[in-house]
Image (tube, rainbow, N blue to C red; front, side, top):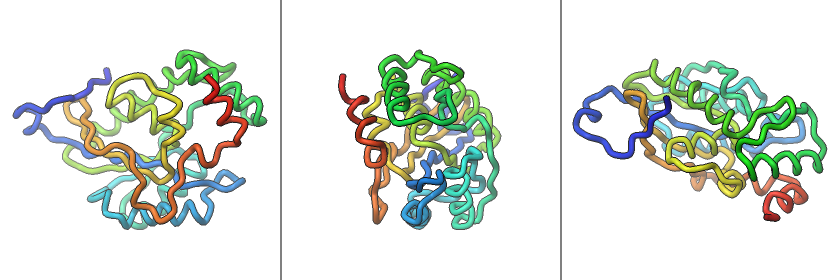
Length: 221
């Protein structure tokens, strides 16, 4: 069960809470790993003091998130570990051309229960994240942890906490090396800080890096 905490009472204030920072990877290059700009974005984030007291950094095993996690780990002096359940939303095929990518993303954001062949729907991905993040966050009572993930995953997680359905515009405006902060206690979540990357020297969002054909298809409705 993924419960939201909208208001805190005195009892919840006394319960051990976990501060969870959800961080997106820096912008990438053609290889799928961080570009030099992306690495600089992550360093900017680490030194912005938006994140404090982190003792563990979780990430998926993908190049972009694991490289981001390694930079943060070095800056924070924290341990790192990977979790398969933090993987990017599965779009089905391993390699998609621009037209296929546009078509699949359009269908998925139009109907969040739409499941591409051999992939998963956005709602299925949200349920995966709920179980995943609540599971290991509960093991860090009274601690601070960071979760490094992909922009689509971060968007889905944010809508889990604040409520409502995920929207394509929220994803398109999700920043690289952005950080959101949440508190977890007694199986419930509270939003502390929405996703933000305004502290970066060079800010980029998903809309900046997607092919124009994909943007046009996603915003055509």
